[in-house]
Image (cartoon, rainbow, N blue to C red; front, side, top):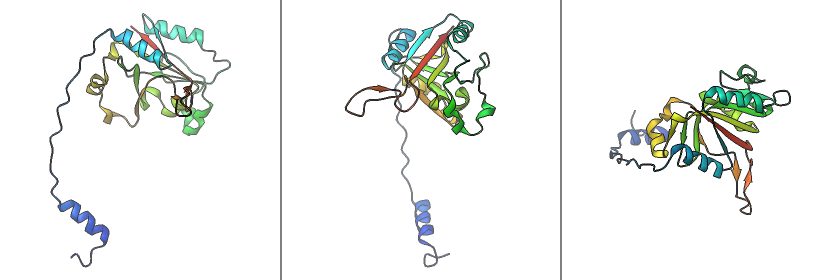
Length: 198
């Protein structure tokens, strides 16, 4: 096919294909050491962003705390952890829009960042991302051995291609866009509690 019979789309794609792009080596990104206690730093930063961190000696103690502090008789609870049952299950959420009924979402934190008080979550660790985003209160269990110093360490330990959805959650949803007034729970959950264990 010559250029006289090619569509403009084909001409553009042919030019792109034939162009010789310069290849540039990606820069080496240095690793920056985090100074300070990981648990203390994580807790202070999370609290600073209106989140809450609770420290437990064991996962069983964290689960016991959930059992004592969540009233499943009045709340719609979605749980994606095997050792705590919710009142609504993933099979009930074939349509993600149904997650709007969830009051409390309980999931796993994959990794925590001391420098920012952030928790990395995925669609696997949450069960359904919409459940966390549409819930009122979000609880994440996080093994303290999964705390890293800073975001450089976090990205060094993560493969973001492993999952369809991944995000750092740093406290509950908030905004200060309007008249510089800080509002918590503006676009999503009004509380984020991280249950740290081990």
